[in-house]
Image (cartoon, rainbow, N blue to C red; front, side):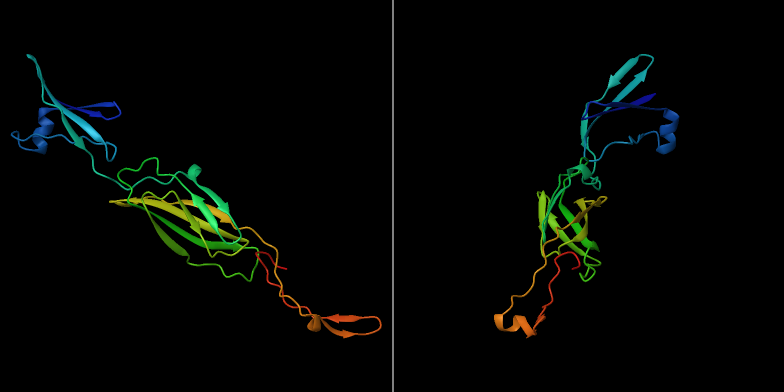
Length: 209
């Protein structure tokens, strides 16, 4: 009988038992092999071959092998923290709990999905920013007040991007603005009982006037 023993970095021990007959079906008897599966990505694994027969057992030298990278897990949703302003959003995040390799970059896609002011054009299909692997925050600028933006952030390794984490953030509403009046143009007409006043259009800042 052949017994393969794999020991993970975490100390978890897995034993895999296969018969000589099974190994011979996989490869000729001169080169038997066994596939050790269900291992975590980008982890050092200790492998040792143990041979046993009625006379006793013999252990091979220990071999350390690192499994390959995989796409990373998602950025933890509980780590996302956003601070909205009138025309900006400051977003913080943390590395995926399961990086499954070396993080190479972050990608954030953002677009406006809803606005209190129907006159505000929503950014669709949206914009995308790429950030280095050591980034933990980003400031989105040139946004509109009173608009709900959908932020999708995902991390990447050499194997590609993982699943995106979504967060909706609404920018703050500010007071409307209006152009200043000259004293001569403010009043258009006067009578004994009425005054006609010039009304310049006000500019909404996130909500209809």
